[in-house]
Image 1 (cartoon, protein in one colour):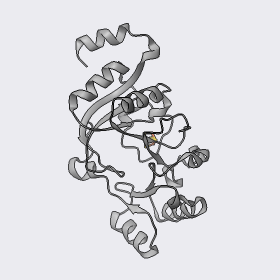
Image 2 (cartoon, rainbow, N blue to C red):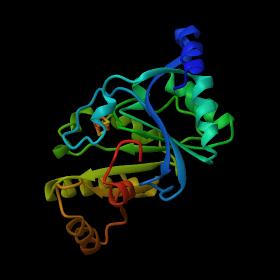
Image 3 (cartoon, rainbow, N blue to C red):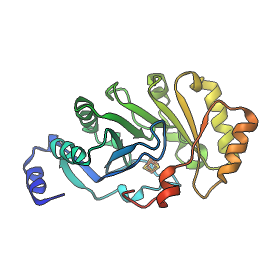
Image 4 (tube, protein in one colour):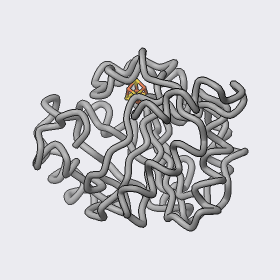
Length: 227
Ligand code: SF4
């Protein structure tokens, strides 16, 4: 953040600020908008501790940014897609207003959320990518099941699969809640925990109507922060 933005942010009322770990331009590595040049706005903090978390550096620290300085930084990258992520972005209540302002500015906005916090207040123009935490994430008890009734066709559900047991559990959840009739459902292998081809083979063998996905940013850049 440059000096002018730092002093403007310090002077702003606290109701106008969010704590951010980073803003950067990259390719969207997953979900329906995979492959699009995308500006990522990573909010600091998460109340969960998934055992496979690859963004633990966003749990603490960060800097305060005003809505205006975030919008200006996003605009400076010149991309049409913006992804608000974390951490768990909805853990900061002002994320809701940020999402609205990004939509108002005309961006294609997506939100990556853990599924542990109510998505009801999120602007309907936002495409919500909602995790369902599996038993082997060690955070399945945090799933807020009432969120499922709020999803629409423009949203996506993501399972990160760590084991065959996780796969069977996820398959049962998809069937029990009729999730594939609601929106796209993605199954991803947990990096280094199961072989991606094993998960792919299970999905094909079961003719499961879900989309297998590998995280593009891990293949391209080995998950470096800021890529
Ligand atoms: S919800 Fe996301 S950011 Fe939070 S611990 Fe789990 S994987 Fe990490």
